[in-house]
Length: 198
Image (cartoon, rainbow, N blue to C red; front, side, top):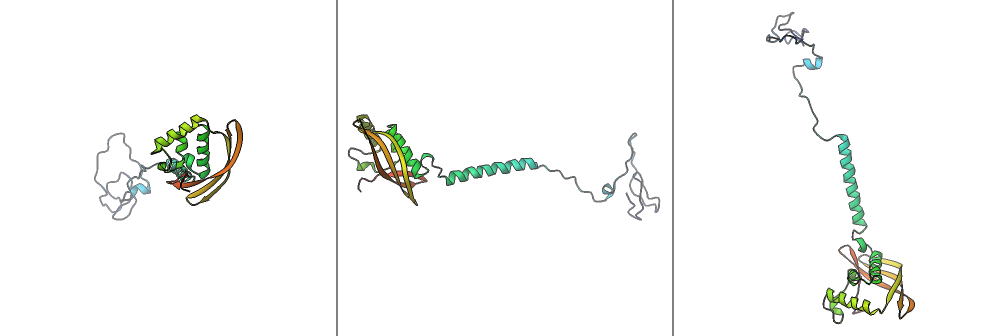
């Protein structure tokens, strides 16, 4: 601590400057047992800075948050660019899903892979009557699909063609056939397009 009048260094407990006699501070009664400590130069300055405290997140917490946000972004990008449409994310997945449903003789699942106008079929007015018609065909046992293989996939923007080969049994005879499906993409999902007017 220094005298503001002459700049003389003062002891902590000084009330007046021994050099010029200026009053440095008022005298206070100091309780017994409390010794005066000598101040450091930082403590002796007339302008004091408030103690700063950080109430924010620790560096480790910030790193964990950044890693978590990065992981979410990666999952989003994978979902976005991998199609995000599950079993109909690609033309190949759609055809595989459809043929698997045919093998299981699941008319409802099979229909979920199709883009058709039901009214084009005889005695069919909506999706439910189309599913009922497919279930009847499965019960009649006309064709038993045994296996399939995807041969080629060609994609042109929102349209695709998938060439495939199926192995099936008709009237007890095993046969193979190569064919292709045309597909359309609607709302990020691929559907097998059936057009009876072709």
